[in-house]
Image (cartoon, rainbow, N blue to C red; front, top):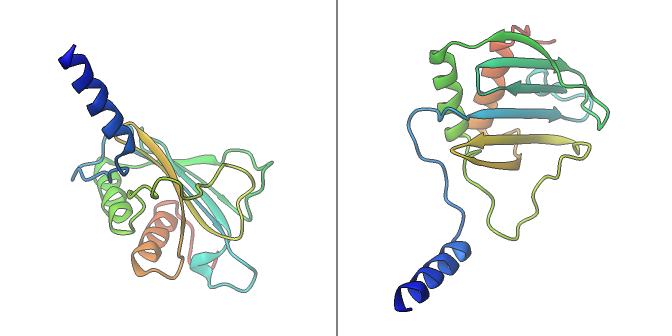
Length: 156
């Protein structure tokens, strides 16, 4: 009986703990990233509207233009190498995208993306979304890299 009570207490305490960040140095096998850039007109070229998806198998999908609730999944552009996946993983970690929002904080729900920058991540068996600051230097590095990997020329 005491063991059962301890297990229940431990389970309850774990449920109340703050979500933990993914800290592995290598990308987990389920690492996937969706990056939506829905910036207002007149933004610089790096922030021009686009939607990028990196699947866990390394497939990179890209679509230019504003994403709406009716937007189809972007077409596959290419498959990334393990080295490129590692680089994206490192940039994603640096940009703070792998830190889940605190419990109770509003999370993106998959509806039509609002203006700005939205990142969805799957890693280490967990999923979450984060509204990001497009002016953050680490986030800009991630955006510029994913655009380059998708073979999107600067200014497009």
